[in-house]
Length: 263
View 1 (cartoon, one colour):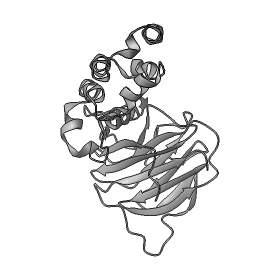
View 2 (tube, one colour):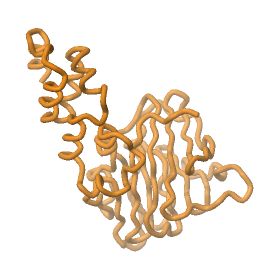
View 3 (cartoon, helix red, strand yellow):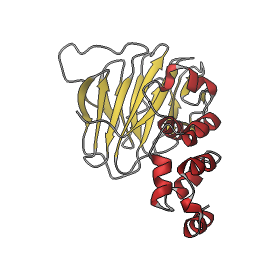
View 4 (cartoon, one colour):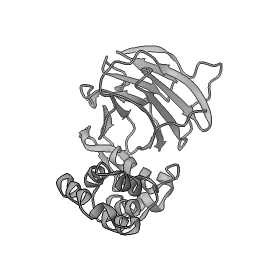
C-alpha cells in the first residue's frame, strides 16, 4: 500500500479532491489507512481531520459487531475513529483463560461457571509509552475477588482456587473491587481509594483506568471523581489492561478511550 500510495503522491493521485480520496479510503482497512496517512499532508488531513468521516464510519461498520454500535457499550467513545481504535484495543480472544470467552460484541468477557478457578484476560495491545485510558465495568456479581489493573505478557491468566490473580506476582498490578485492596507481587499494598469509608463498587458502575507510561503511574476514576494514583514506579515494559474474575457467568466489559483528558 505504501508503494502504491507513494506513487500516487508523486503523480496526480495526491491532487484528487478530498471527497474523492475519502470515498477511496473508505474501502481500506486500518493498517492500509495508517500507511496512507504517511504519504502526504493532504492524505493525512483527509484521514484524521474528521474522525466521523465516511472513512471511519465504513471501517466501524465492517469491524465492529452491530451490538457494539447500537447499544451503550461505546457511549463514551464519541467518534467512529475512536470506536474502531477501541475495538483494536479490546480483550484478546487468544490471550485469556480457557474458562472465559469474549462475547460477539467484541468487548465483553464472559466467565464460565467453573469451580475452584480464577480466570483473567488481557487486551490485544499493550503500552510501553504514552498516556492511555480505558473503562471497565462488571455486569453480574463480583464474587469474592474481582480485580482490574494491568499485567505484562508473563503474568498468568488462570490459576486454581479463588484468588486475586491480578497482582499475585511481580508481573501484574490490580485493584480488588470487593475489598478495595491494591495488589502487587502477592502482597496487599494498602487500601484504595485512601479515604475513610470508601464506597464499595456497585454493579454496572464504570471505572476509568489511567495508565501514564511517562510518569510510570496507574490511577483510577469513578464517574467524574478522580480517586488518585494507585501505583507508582511501574517498570519500563509493555503493560496490558487486564482483569481477573471468579464468579460463574459474570461478565466484564472493557473499552479503550484513548488519551485521557486532563483537568
